[in-house]
Length: 237
Ligand SMILES: N[C@@H](CCC(=O)N[C@@H](CS)C(=O)NCC(=O)O)C(=O)O
Image (tube, rainbow, N blue to C red; front, top):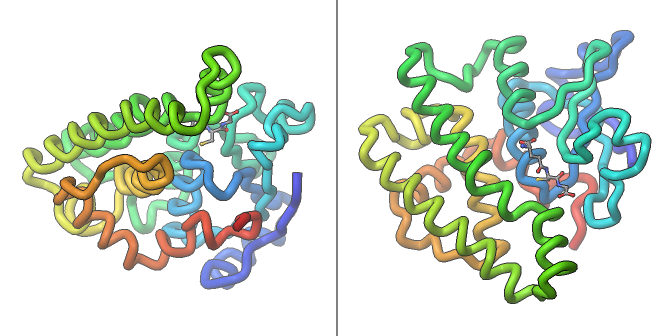
């Protein structure tokens, strides 16, 4: 585990006060982790910059006793704040949204909220878990799959998952520059990391017109830019 302290950059000035009290907000993540990436975007949108503790997943640091004490699931991310440890990226994001209501991540109407959550869950519950490190390691160890087979496995779930999302977004009539309207919501926080993973696994995404329009908007948004894996203090070449 490596404590990188509070990040420099545009968030620091907004957050400094929150990090000087008795409770230092600590975020446990790893630069390419999708679930951590979702939370980093939310933290940036809320103007928060917690201390960052890097947990190197490929070195197995998520299974060290000190981390399992925080999250017995051995999964990233975790957010430690005010004497609480929050886990599960969507629970963390909704907690951030409830406690920092500016730049809301869910629309006000209950049907719209359900729609945005459904978009987010389609990614976070139905696509992402199949490409997780522990799943890929199991496929390798038990079924002898190497890089090519593992990438094909991931594409097998990512491509139809994103294709269905593209249809849903197109039919909704509510997609704009972002998944819902013209400001970021929970759905965009899940979509951007999923598209990052899609590229890593060589998935075909060029035909996803609605999604690619949204990704272009996110790529131009400073909160998303600052959350990119390549810009994290633990990023590796
Ligand atoms: N549903 C969880 C998923 C968390 C998760 O799968 N995290 C991954 C990184 S994206 C992880 O820690 N994987 C460790 C492993 O597979 O051993 C969430 O949204 O927080």
